[in-house]
Every structure is written in C-alpha cells, then in structure tokens.
Length: 266
Ligand SMILES: [Zn+2]
Image 1 (cartoon, rainbow, N blue to C red):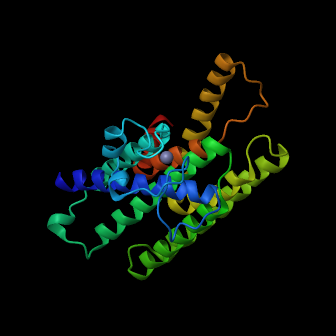
Image 2: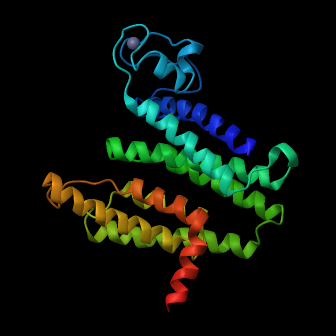
Image 3: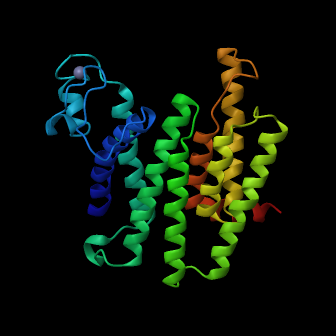
C-alpha cells in the first residue's frame, strides 16, 4: 500500500516535469539545462514554486512574480500523472519496499511509468496542438525496443514473442497508413500512423485489437457528441492520438479480459 502512495507522490513530481518537457518540446527549447521559468514573465522559478499541487494551491493559481494566472493544465497534468502512477503501481502489485529494487518486477514498474509518461505527453500534445512530435514517438519506440530486447536477453520474453510484437507493429502501421492514405489524411494524421508502431510494440497481438476497438469506439462516440452539441462539421478535427493512447493503456492492463469476454460471446 505504501508503494502505491509513493508512486502517487512520484507521479505528482513527474507530472510537474512532464509539463515542463511539453512546454519546452513545443517551443523547441532544450530541456537538459536551464531553470524552469514562468512562461508569462520569464522569471526563474524557485524550488518552492516547483512543488506539485502545493505551490499551485498556495499561490492560488497565480505566478508569484507577475501574478498572471497559471494555466490549470499544469495542475491537471500533475494530478492525472499522480493518479496514473498510483494505478500502474496498484495494477502491477508494486512491492519494492519488501522485494527490493534489483528485480524484474521493479524494472517492469519503471518501464510502465515511462510508458505512462509518454502517453500523458502525447495526450496533451495532440489534444492541444493536433500534433504528436516525432521526438516523443521515436524515443518511445526506442525505449520500448530496448526494453523488449533486454527482456528477451533475460528470458522473460521469447524470441517468438519479440517477433510477434514487431510484426504486430508493422501490420498495424500498414493498416493505419492505408486509412491515412485512402482518406487523404481526413481519417487521421500521419502522427497517428507513426504512433501505432509504438503501441503495437507495447501491446502485441491480440491485445492490440481491444485497444483499437476502444479508440475507434470512443472516438466515434465523442465525435458524435461534439457534432451534436458544438455543431461541428464532419471536417472539424478531433485528434485521434488521445483515444489511441487511452485504448492502449486500458488494453495493457485489461486486454485479456476484453478478449476472453469477446471469445465467450462467440
Ligand atoms: Zn510570471
């Protein structure tokens, strides 16, 4: 239980860091050096300003220096990252306080924290700016490939399963590329086509199927709701990336349930 709370707290801090990474990637600034600063007045932030949630609440959502309001997005991302890290620790039965850190379970936990962080950044980017930066997708693919190859060396993953994952990624890439190509980019952007390589490697077959089902289903439902209430035309863009990462997150942990439920219907 303490592990879950520690993961929640880690998530709040990582969420604060992800806000900063997203801002810097979007503005094409390096995030390896330099202080955090207020995007409105450029004043450097002190350590006190960087404490997640607490600093936002104690400053009542305003910058300490210029009193301009701080975007609620910062608070939201910190909270959501905390909750997602808590969920990941819970779903993976994190027990590093008793089991220690030098084992596969802990490596797995760290990998899923990485994946969750990528998903959250991709979610914000696509929702806000309708783009998924290549830097995020490609580094996500690289981290996943490294993890899969390491798992194969450690005999956690068979060579066949590694092959199935690469093949899944390739097939789902072709499927999305066809959707992109024949709809002339109207069904989805090319960013989504690259993103599914990352998701295919993570999920493998058949878990990719419930992920895509959840993404397309939610995308259609929310698209319909938007059209009804905001009178948006068919052409108005609804980013698909957030649905894809959400579907993948659900399928990573609950894919088996979906599949056995579906098979029981047959
Ligand atoms: Zn300021």
